[in-house]
Image (cartoon, rainbow, N blue to C red):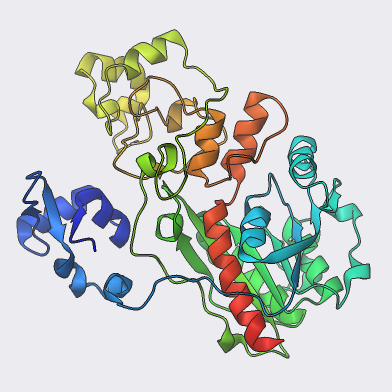
Length: 406
């Protein structure tokens, strides 16, 4: 049983910065203690009982979300990408009837790994799913967040024409699944001052679905060694009881980068070797000077100014720049390009970006899941994916709901 939590872990648990915790330490709100063996400043588990949103740490019940489906539940996935969501749902026990993806290389990834899947490589606007009406239980999709044109106070389906959310809602309307789940980035919650997501909820209501309050899930609480966040929009067909759906409960353990890349609880072996990008010589020379867990502020001042350029004088943290990851923390959110300047994710020990297989591990893909296309195409597919383990936990929530409802 875990007794102590590090500064970084508590910052993640509470969604506050390390600087905020240091300030709380000084003013007595939450005072760090010395861990007996290492003498690092940490927090005792019982100190965290004052925070209502951390009650899951103290729940003595089994914290597994796993549940067995009572029958074969099926899904259609739109904007399927390289399959992170689909693989996670499959691991939970949900079958994919059809997957739609416009990108050539992502669609090839899906076909290569699951020849039995019905992969429809086309613009979703050109695809009808009417033949699946009343034959599918779930429709999922990670649509981009695009602003709507408002027509009157209540946004209707036709007002969203031309957006990819319209296509998601159209397919839901065509197939009438018991449950539909849209996933997106955190920014959706505030996009266009909150009007975009309000419009989405209005449209799903219009086509016959009760929408639960959008939920922000932190991947680190669902066996993913990465500080990634996804917003879920869950719609329940109105003839069913929406109160029977529960979002997956968090796990007590937070996995770190070592868990992703080394043999352990998450994977039975060290990460396989694979191709990867390299840094330009000048960038490598700079990153050589950054300690594990450090970033640009750990560089000598003259190198800071040269590397950051005008950004040096603009203030703010910019903590993703010249960033070297730490073995002892989850990775920062992976991007589609591991070497870009704003969001470096340097290996903890070697001065290089993560390889393709390391990227895939951090997103909790199985080691045998192979990605098609060039190295840059593979990074893009992995960086855009829903973490597989997060998707699996969402899958368990879907199965629990369907077991109670159908």
